[in-house]
Length: 122
Image 1 (cartoon, rainbow, N blue to C red):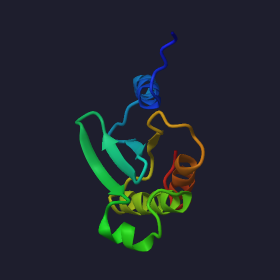
Image 2: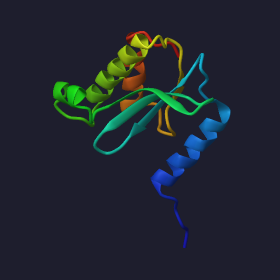
Image 3: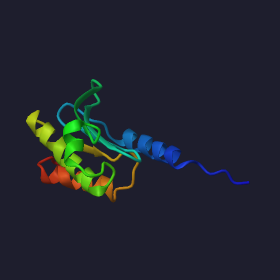
Image 4: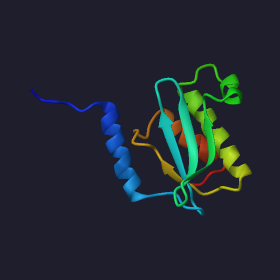
């Protein structure tokens, strides 16, 4: 019988392959995205010291109040705008995009496009 790996295990392995290729620095931190079945999370991380500089998610009250649902493309686009605004307020304009092993389409793409439109460069 052929054993098949779970999707989450495959995603974790892809993410580790991506993480070996790049990391966030103080000049150009990493925009890490995680998507669960119900929510999305985005954080900007400086990997040299291991600090999260900026974070946003659909769990936050101010973000959740603006959304009808927290797990669709519209919510992802709004979260991208929110994380970009918070980053700009802290003086961060350049980031490295870490899609977290997820395929670059749908919600992940919407978040990235919204962050770019709001002023982040990657």
